Length: 332
Ligand code: ATP
Ligand code: MG
Image 1 (cartoon, rainbow, N blue to C red):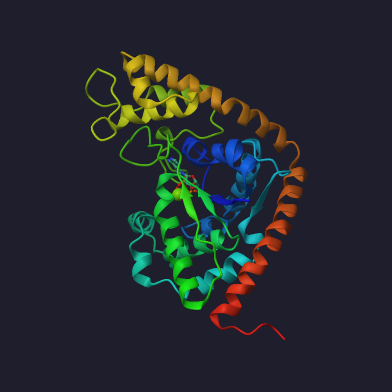
Image 2: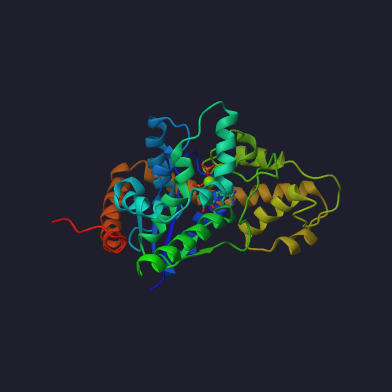
């Protein structure tokens, strides 16, 4: 059976981008057709300046929202990265096949390092090695497919390179995975700055729709979205990125396609109103389920405990194989 792995960082409140680009597919498609693991990658949340209490809070909230979005612990495995030591064990081995140059070429590293420097902070070494830990997350499970948004395609490509290199040098240890990117809404853009991806650790609240935003807040944010000059509604990501973003969001929420939707509208106003309502409707059931789950934290904890146990059992043989292959003696 196909094995699927994907993760999400507890670095902020989850966004519409996280939902449309990743989580919704995990819940609606992947968990039903593949043996799937979904992980709150909390160690990755320590790669930028962080507040420990906030990371704890967001880890719980992120796990709860994954379940609220429809992940079913009876058919998939939901767990926290830090509960399964195999990720960090494997990460070190992969650091021994990855190169410094490869890490420095990663777009996310360049962007996040610049952001940290702009804030007057220093860049953590773990931010540089982040893609190696991500590769370990994926390779530890013999993953075939990694459903992610477009922004993570480069990291999955690196994961493939590391798997192939390790296998060639030290013998077959890893399945070589591939990214699966959604057809629409692979890269939801910030509503106030459509040149920038909508990200949960962004500071600008008004350009980012959060999964837990009240309907009126969602409406306000979508209605105030920056659009491009021009009056006609056309789908052109390069020339009209603000408009294209709204059409992408509407298409992803209603199951349509952005080009044909452009033909339906003759004003920005009606497009924005319909997009706002479509987003509100998509978020409604997730928010309702989230409220129920918040009333039962012991259930969420139980899911994470069982998930970590299952994940450990799956990862250990692969990671042990890699330890032997690279030249380490088994413990006596
Ligand atoms: P951060 O700003 O801390 O990096 P993020 O919003 O980018 O947070 P991640 O935890 O890094 O979220 O990514 C989780 C998943 O969501 C990944 O599969 C990523 O590709 C996807 N994703 C993130 N932002 C978007 C977006 N704007 N559009 C589509 N997919 C997205
Ligand atoms: Mg990200």
